[in-house]
Amino acid sequence: MEQLDISDGFDVHDYRHGLKLLKQDRGTMTLANRDGFACPACGDPFERLFVSERRTNTFGDPGRRFCLARTEQELLLLTH
Image (cartoon, rainbow, N blue to C red; front, side, top):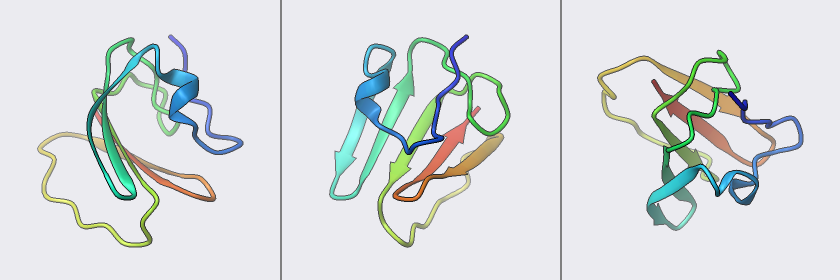
């Protein structure tokens, strides 16, 4: 299982073969993990990935375990 590498930031194009874009708006995107990539925070496979370039975000209750990962440019929220 390939783990998302965020050591030099996160580029969705590096993983486009296994991530499906579900929603995108100005500064955020939500993707489904079709190939079972591993979470950069815990190493377990994740279901959804939310990527934000915004400085502030508000989240509802995802109803499941989640991890946060931060690059210099983005916040990643991964739900399991």
